[in-house]
Length: 248
Image 1: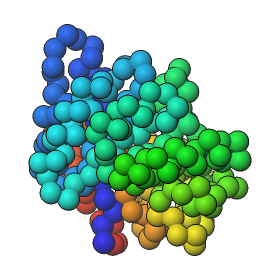
Image 2: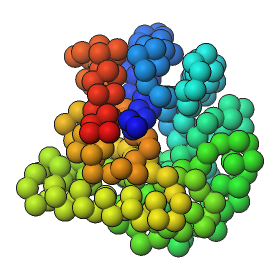
Image 3: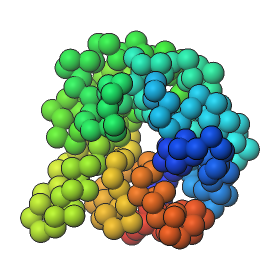
Image 4: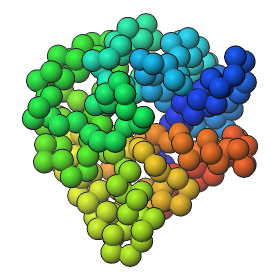
């Protein structure tokens, strides 16, 4: 079974927001991604609206409904203006990320010893809305398994360290693959499904897919949108779908 590809469209919105125009169209390009075969769309709205805006979240929800068996994934910190949008949209998946308001991008997973009890009721409430809940986690977290006890369905492994080590090559690459393999196995052993995301691209994605048979879904935005400037959205999604099928 191929790993599912969820296309993060934040960077399309970043470009659009530089002008008072609806160019490029977030919904239009998301439609191309879905028509080409992407399994879903991911957004990560932030309180400062520097990319995805609340209306985008609503418009994309209506778009995804037009495609059978496709998923809508909303990422974000549940303690910073996240709940209102999720309650309106009721996405397929809520990916909870420990971003602060001022962060440029996600750069670490949850510390469940510190935040676990705050997350527990949030997870229960989101599941009550019908959403699958995934927690953004570091592969080397000693508390990875605790996500299951808190009620999460999945973990999303933060893959920037993997991407950096892959680019370095050699022993660093092999050690990173081993670390992420072990993390996926740890998650699977307690009944957690596994997603992955951050800095994945056409070069490093196949090795991760091959190494992690537990992997269910990857969420990819920055590199994919960058590649789309060269190849076009449809052809780029096809390339990433091929990478998601590596030896599956």
